[in-house]
Image 1 (cartoon, rainbow, N blue to C red):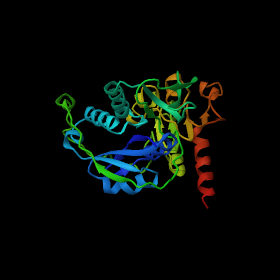
Image 2: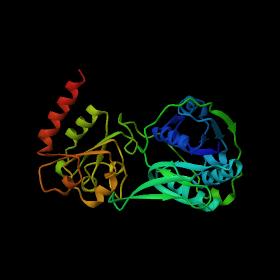
Image 3: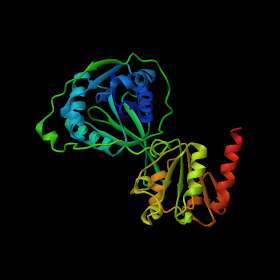
Length: 319
């Protein structure tokens, strides 16, 4: 069975949910082989084995870890050649998409970004689905040349456990001087908020102009659900919430199981970042707000009255 390479997304050895999703998808296409960059492999091994990684290529080379994305594209190109991989799956974040683009050029292969579904093709190969034009269309795509390189959006698959050996093999890539043009000079852990990462969360609660700058009911409701907190561009531009929490075409694109839009009108800029969510709920005082054209469930009302009641009901249901 041909190997399917999965680039591991981790923080200090803690494997992110996106990787367990990619390993689940990889099993549809062949034998999952993880590619782990960094020196915290021992902390990650159990999780990689739990989700079916049969082999792990471990890369601790400073020529890779001390630089930005270009060396990772080179090491993946060398692994594609070494393994004759059936496909390469990469998380669809900003770094992952740049790595994938560079890798596609180096291997003379087709590239598909922001896939929301990946399956084995009827005639072999890889069949993907993308949501395009702000979620207005679904596109079916296949790679017709080289090794399929696919970046996959978070929450595109439900992680499924399947015991794997996670047999690790140290891999020493040869990194060119040209790939070492951008060096990491300092890094520090992201400040913990107690909430899940916005792009990985299964539930996202976002606030917009209707909050008037008071995000407390949005945050309280999100915490009752164990959700991440997002914001519209209007809220971010007004200085009410950090830019890192912006959901939209010029912010982060999310695809959770549940998205709750609070006081957000539903401009196309925002819709482009959340329209692929599985279930969408909107709370807005304006019954003519464009967001109601998109939702599965809509509540016409004041978020400052609706959200506290919803929070109380959620907490009561917990016993």
